Image (cartoon, rainbow, N blue to C red; front, side, top):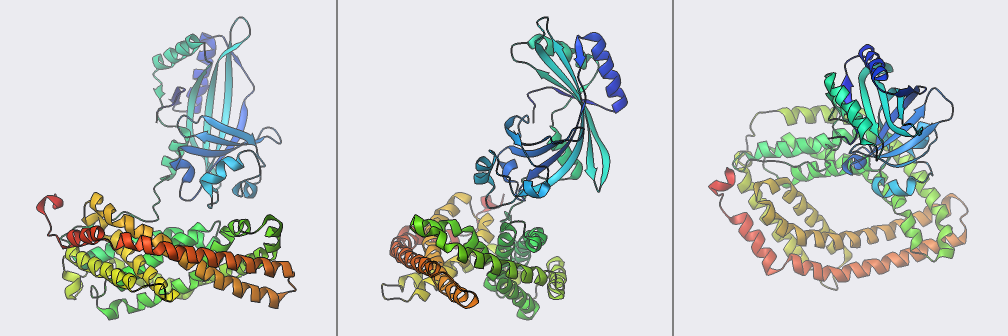
Length: 525
């Protein structure tokens, strides 16, 4: 990444000080008081700022009192986008203080929290070049940085930074020429990149849904282990975050990764002997049961403002007692979940599961030895036609459970498509994914409204039993149930249109042609 302002690397602090003296002898520069800073860099776990070419840095003066800034920076050249006074307490920073930056950052960060990436110590020596009118035309900074690692300071870098002023190019040109003649190396990396390299951090590398690259002619048991290893990696990356719960997305990604692994085991039956994987299937079912209540409560709290917005403004405050109940129940469930994820049962499962994933012994089943693309084609067609049959059987008189069952079948089909998409051309795959996603959207809304109505009734009963509840709260919750019932009816009406696209002749032809065609030689090259 090229910087807009020249940065030169200097091997040691002694050489840096010597260079500074030579610069002062050559040019009309005046030295200013030095400054001492500590910089703490922040981003979300999934690098949302970095992916937007941005950084967030807390800058605290350590040589003076009460000077701390929160800087929102452009990753390219560290250009300051916004800068505001900030409290020093790290816990406040993680909660994003109520400063002008907050409304700008929240759309990027929500619902993730800010996490500290690393901290560095920065010593700056400043020189200024003024013209005959006493106007500053150039600044030069010698910056020495140290990295906080395991409560110790580690030398990181000494660099000379040239900061020109618009309209005064000559002083900058002279200083830069002098630096090149001194044999200084111009840096093409900024400070953030250098520290990330030192710490072996890879911002932006986290993928909650890893892209798999399977070999079409490979064995199915090998492909399944690859699928399971990818999901397990996501589980492990989110395990500690799910226990500590700095934000809700750790649990979400952990739960989805578990569900994907469970789906792969259940849908690809016959790849391994049943007795080899039955205990794992039971363990993943247990994890699904244990993560479900906390995730449901997380979702209610995340959506709470939208629930309030569905009510008349004068009744929105009546739901606050409901919010307090959700927060109390969420804290209880989170504590239980954290205990489960540190239990002997989880540790035993994870140890046995690792042995299974790393075992290179071929499966003894016929399904395990089959070519993976043939297996995938057969399972995908079977899953698609099951969805078709279930959807065609639904009419206006069908119970809600019929749509819930179809939603589950569509989710299984979606997982299978994601597992095996690398075996087919991406363009052709998108043609079958689009109508499936549209159908899942309507089925998901239908299911959410149904589940939330039932939950609201149960929460109302809990409120009435636990404490005296204002009648207005129960009335507001009742109105919310009615609103959700209406939205559920609208989703059911939309279902017919979205299922028509999913079941159209065009989509059926795409599925049949894509998953019945032979493997072409050119596709393997």
